[in-house]
Every structure is written in structure tokens, then in C-alpha cells.
Amino acid sequence: MAATKTDVVVLKGDGKSKGEIKLDYAVLRKAVLILRAVNHDLRQAIIKLLESNKKLTVTEIYIKLRLEQSVASQHLAILRKAGVVVTERDGKYIHYTLDKGRIKEISELIGDLVSE
Image (cartoon, rainbow, N blue to C red):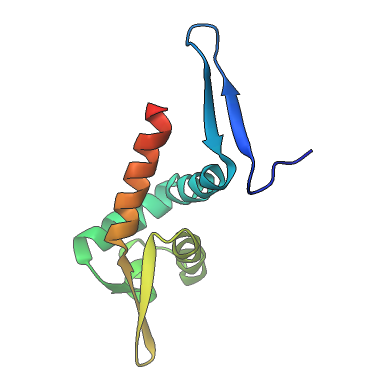
């Protein structure tokens, strides 16, 4: 049976560690979405580019990274869905920026998962 959003996932120890690790299923699903989004070389390159340039359009991103426009857009959509980047419309242009608060949350989430 699949876990529901209110379930707790229990990870058993490997014999070396003592006890079990209990994780909230909703938190775990959120972590998986975020980690999948940032665990890709091209998306990491986009994140680094946005970090150094603060605000870019998809055109600027695909030119700087030498990508097809559709490839850049697909990867930006994944980052946007995970909340890593935010968009801001300026006339006909859409600017992408990093969500610094979300980046901090991701860092804390990883720290929580590792420390449990």
C-alpha cells in the first residue's frame, strides 16, 4: 500500500546504527522534489549563472550556456516547480531569479535529513 500524506516513513537501522529514523511523508516528498530538481548538472549550471547574474531572461540563459531555448525552458520549469527560481514579468520579458529564502530552506532540509 502506498504511503499517504499523513503517514510517517520509518527507516530501519543497518545494524551498525541504533534505532529507527522516522520521517514525515509530506516532508520527505518535498525533499525528493527539491533534491531531484537541483541534482542535475545543467540545472546546477543555471543556478550558478543566476547566482552570479542576479536576474536573467530565458534568452540570456540559453545563450550564455549554449543551449537550445526549449532545453533551457524545460530545466527552468523544473527549478520553478521546486521553488528554486522565481519569475518576474517585465513587459514581454520574464526574468528569472533565485529564491534565496527557498535555497536556505533547502539547505536546512538537507541538514535535517542528514542529522536524523
